[in-house]
Length: 286
Image 1 (spheres, one colour):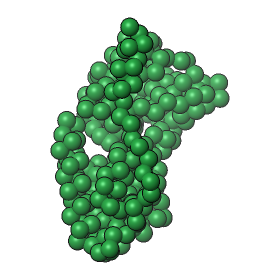
Image 2 (cartoon, rainbow, N blue to C red; image 1 turned 135 degrees about the vertical axis):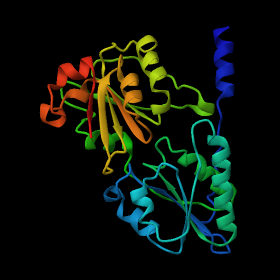
Image 3 (cartoon, rainbow, N blue to C red; image 1 turned 45 degrees about the vertical axis):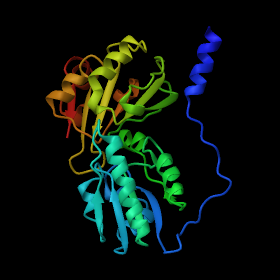
């Protein structure tokens, strides 16, 4: 029976056969597409390549909803913002593809601007495959991922000698809005969650009940990393969902779980005694 179950699970996995060859980078009508990572939010953290592309007035940009206003203000050409919200990703993604196809058929230089890095929980690989169906191979420009930059900007080192020697990256939303499987607790481990604020309460419960995390495991949420209104909310698995609700935490936010959260925090950062307050009532740094 176990063998049959394993075979059934394997059959359910989607397999993608490699192409015989890549399509051309440019269509006969001149149309092309570039997949660009916008980083966590601050214009200062754009790559040079990304900055050049988004400030070129000849480009037609299809932009993720969570790309910051500070970066949108740099765009010189025409752009459209995707209306991708939790629960409506499928419809919004179809709209994105329709806009990209429309631009390609018009012979335009299309830029698909995505928050963070396109290939880290950004559906970048899926978009590449779809663009290949359109007959064009996109150019991909990497971005600074919030998975590592957001904790850094909040003075949270995701690794630290004697505290954490491994990092796990997870998404808050699996395929078809499912909850992804969680890795089991290890005391010297940091877990970074992207796109998880919308189900933070359920995530905290699952980490304790299903992955055996202690209730007092430190948690930090970095909201709008690198932007002028960046905030850091610090608590633990017992109180972090309540804290996020009280303080109105919204996407884009990066969640860090593990002892590293408290390694570099000081009384000066929060204007109060840090460790005990973080455990008991939480801390907020603007």
